[in-house]
Image 1 (cartoon, one colour):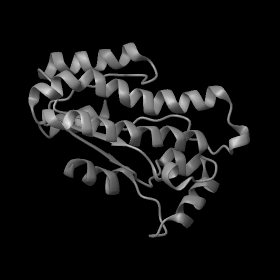
Image 2 (image 1 turned 45 degrees about the vertical axis):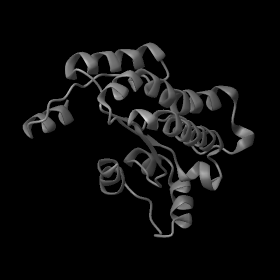
Image 3 (image 1 turned 180 degrees about the horizontal axis):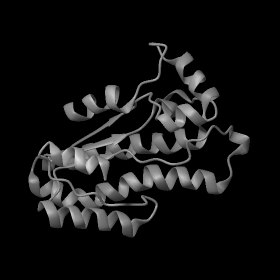
Image 4 (image 1 turned 60 degrees about the horizontal axis):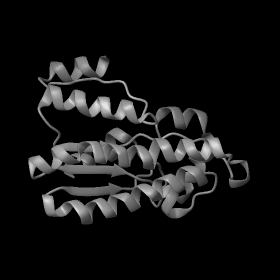
Length: 184
């Protein structure tokens, strides 16, 4: 509600819709409501992901791994599929998927999360090849970022990520990711 008010004050038209991305019907609802309100979809940004707590491989159970997969890779795929007809119709659609250096680098303690993020990279490459002919650009980026919640609840994991970063710090969504998403 605060974000809605902030954007409305800047003249933006917004439609907040609550969605559990692990529920396919809720994904369909989000897209349907957006299409109803805005007459289509031009841009999709997939950035939801669960199962981000530090867990070494031997501590990953099936439920935790499936949460990572369903909230990340599968949700990204389902949003892409739901938005595809509208992105195709626009002739210049954009999909921006969020993966993670945690998957690419094999960061300790992030096995399920990294596995899901690597699957997002795979579906992005396939989407780019299949949908480029319709004028749809499909990109993925791999940020090393931490939300305030992650910074507060995962100090050891944060320290590990900072040590691996060439800048010696972990980015933020506002300062590091937002400008890249706008560019894409």
